[in-house]
Length: 306
Image (cartoon, rainbow, N blue to C red; front, side, top):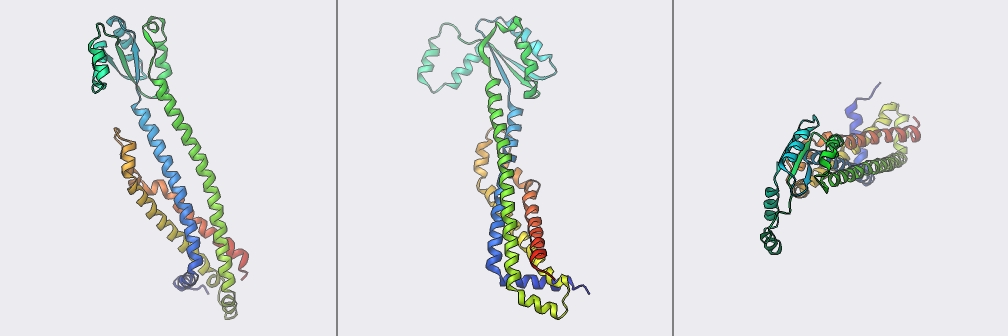
């Protein structure tokens, strides 16, 4: 006859508290594993969000040589604006570029005196181009490479190359984080499995006399095995709860850092991590629970012959 679940659960709770130090060590290992994998998952989300923000904010500034006629500039602006890959093109005159330069260095007395003494404007006009995405830039670049306009563009007068390099570095960093995360996840998963298996083995050895008596009085296999499996569920759930609280506390503590990281962008990363908490961290939390149960099942099947 199958023993009622509540009764088996009570025995599991008793075993858990009787072996509290052993259970605590197992929980700590699981909390460390979940927290580490959770942090790496959070880092991946942050870097992905950073790349998305950068891609949406990047624009191309094409600086033209001083003295470039307005006809050439407007012709180039029209041709770029007609491309389906272009979202917008802003024409900035040479005078506006000079004024922006002065405003940017308003507190620098040397530059202020130097610009005041200028007889001619050393700046040329420029075009600020916003593409639909960075992947569209090569198509826009073909227009800029046209011989009609190439001679009017300042050498090194395109700003996107530096932005592309920064985004490529960030993308490369994200890929490395993902690989590192996978390696650490596998390592800590193996450690967690070994710890739970060893914990269950010690618990079975400690309670071997009780198990023998249970079998002598006719206890079912479920009544003997069940408490160990349910105890593994307790361990997995407690570890997941503690790790969740630690991750949420970490998000709250780092909120100021998130704000400074995305300053100037319409992104509240701390709030995003909180509102999407389970969507981001459900893998480590659920994985810990499943690992705990599977590890206990392996230990019970190997060391508890009933």
